[in-house]
Image 1 (cartoon, protein in one colour):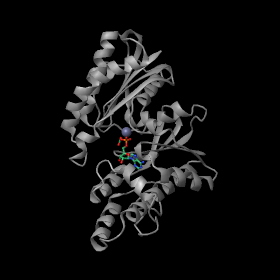
Image 2 (cartoon, rainbow, N blue to C red):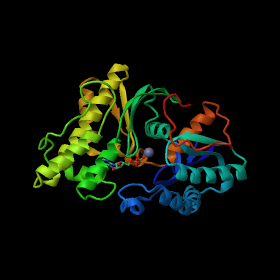
Image 3 (cartoon, protein in one colour):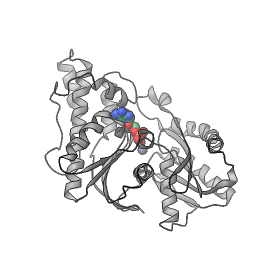
Image 4 (tube, helix red, strand yellow):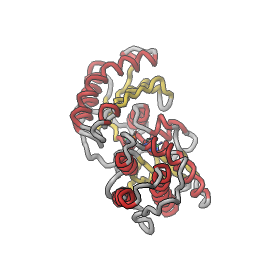
Length: 333
Ligand code: KG4
Ligand code: ZN
């Protein structure tokens, strides 16, 4: 079965074609970051209009890349939350139109569950149970995945997402938007122990907080204006990585899960990719990072989640799907 996946929950317009559960025929992503860079964050109205402009073209391109026609689509999967309501509606309206025209089921997908499916696409031989760490510009949470389709959120940020904390710090340093990759690169030349940034909420629990870290960086810059940028980046990133690693390891140990799966844009970070496996290894825990192109927002993960819902959970699909900007992963099926 060929599954068409559509993702427009934030600032990436993405279309994918998946054959069965994991053969990616096409996975196209158009990123709007240049459009939003001058605002230093995502402007929802501009995002909706840009999705509307790009999505039809991307659909044609995905079919051409896959080498199939419209009649080859057997199932449509689309993100219906969480995300920005306008952008979600654009993707959902296109998806519903295609499902009606082709007379195939329309399956709504939770964006956070879709992120976890990056692992199923890249490492089908390492199935749940595992502890999922979803860490992106919009989300930072820990979820126990008992099996595909059974998610329990056990912790997460109480304020900024980790990627957002990096992006806001990047704005402070004038590094452009989004700043995660730039900070990642600059940090490699700096000393992670140069500045004693705080590790908020580190001592106990599974929740996190990154807003205080950003405030600490503002004050450090004011009081020490000559600190080298690579040292600032390395020290700030180290604080973020320490918190993420500590919480993920604590959650996995507490829940007796032997694997940690890291997904979302921040999973591309080199320091996190080094530090987490090293520290988790001390506790006998394995860590999996899907390839970066599956970690960041894309539609192959949406198609994979839709395929699972339809073929394995028996979800019948519905054309009366409504966007849910605050959709939770906890207990979602
Ligand atoms: O998952 P994603 O593409 O979009 C959503 O936010 O849903 O994640 C984007 C986030 C941004 O905050 C960006 O700065 C961060 O991922 N990011 C990185 C790296 N590449 C992207 N953060 C740290 N290191 C990277 N190499
Ligand atoms: Zn995402």
